[in-house]
Length: 162
Image (cartoon, rainbow, N blue to C red; front, side, top):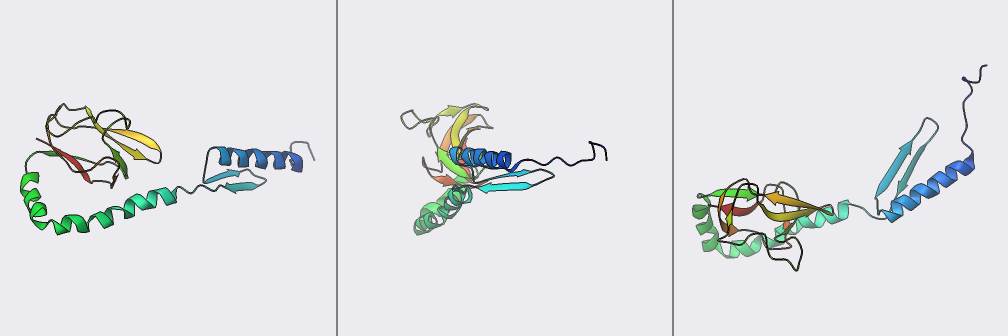
């Protein structure tokens, strides 16, 4: 047998050090899972942080908010007539709506403000990433449908531009 045909075996000490290093990375970065595969072995390390838990509450939270608008039936009936006018900015992702870049900063836009196509109108936080939402339309902000800090769904109307 030639030396090329011999299988190299990783010493157990090196494997243990590798697993310990990976576990440290998972813990420090609050990862839910890391998987390393080689020809010789598969290593899977699961952390304490599960990304599914934070994502689930925003999806479930809008449901309790639904009965409140149902109680205001006349207001809800009046909105569809208004919604026919203007363009809508909708949420491209599931996350949390923020009207300003930081709590102490003023809102990007308020009702009555003029916006141009490409202007940042809000932020949606999703999986700890802040995503700036730009207006696709130029005009005047006629209505903002979401309050600061509220969860939003994909495709949910955020504001109306006239």
